[in-house]
Length: 372
Image (cartoon, rainbow, N blue to C red; front, side, top):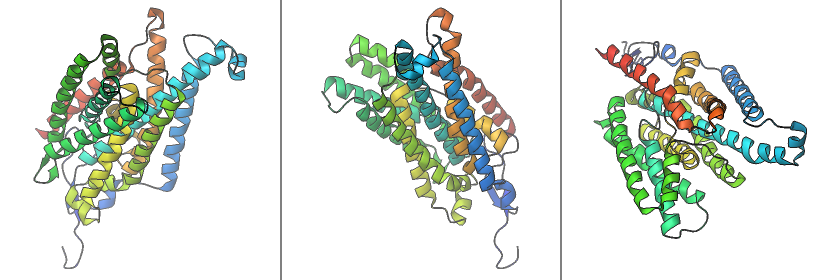
C-alpha cells in the first residue's frame, strides 16, 4: 500500500449461518463498494412501493375473507351486525397483525445487521422474552398492587424496560474483548429466554386461575380484537421504534462490516449499538404487550427479503417492516380460515414457529458446515 493512501478493504469469511453471497466483516485489501451492494433512492422507492402494495393487498384480503360472509353495503354504511363485525372485530385484528409483524421484522432485520448474523431474531436473542417478563410484571402491578392509569401503558413501559435490559444483557454477555460475537450472543439469548420463561411461569402463581390462563394463551402468541386505544398505543411504540431503525439503517449497514471498519468510516459504534438496541426494544415491547411471544417471524421475513434485495440495511429494514406486516396479516388470516371447521382460532405464534423453526435449523446447519 502506497504511503498516504487509505487502506483497501478485503471481505472476510461469512458470519455463522450467512446466506450464499453475503460476506462477513471486511479487512484491508478489497474494494468497499462491492461489499456494500447497490443502493439508490430509486431502488429504495421501488422497495417501499412494492412493500406498501403487498401490505394493502394483504389487509384487503384478510378483511374480505373471514368466517362470516359480510353484506358489504350494510357493513360500509356503519349500521347493523355486519358493520360491527367489520369495524369492531375484523379490521382491528388485521391492523394489529400488521403492527406486530412490522415491529418484530424491523427489529429482526436490524439485529441481524448489528450482529452480522442472519440467525438473529428478537425471539431467539431473548429480547421478546425480556419484554414478556416486563409485561407480566405490569400485570402483577395492575392486579395485585392497584396500579392505576389503564393496563396497556404500564405493560408497554414495563415491557420496554424488560426488552431493553435483555438486549443490553445479550450485548454484554455476547461480547468478547469489547466486540460483539454473533454465536455468543445467540447462546446468551437462549439462556435469557429460558430464564424469562421460568420467571413468567412463577409469576402466574400469584395470579387468579382465570388470569393465569390468559397469560398462558398470551405467551403462545395470539392476536385478539383490540380497542382503538390499544391499537393507537401499540402503533405509537411500533412506529417510533421502526422510524428509529430506518434512520439508523445506514450506520447498521456499516457496523455489519465490523466494528473497527465502521469506526474508521466515522461511525459512533457504541452510540449506534445503544440506539439500535433501544429502538428494537421499543418496537418489540409494543408488539409483545398486545400479542405475546410470536417467534421466528423476525428471522423468516428478513431472510427471505435478503435473498431478493441483498443485505443493505437501508433497503432491508424498511422492506422488512412492510413485508413483515403483510406476512403476519396473511399468516393470521390463513390460520383462522384453515381452522374454521374446528371452530377454533390457532395462536399465530404457533404458525410462525412451524414456518420459522425449520429455517433456523437450516441456517444453523449451513453456518456450521461453512465453519468446518
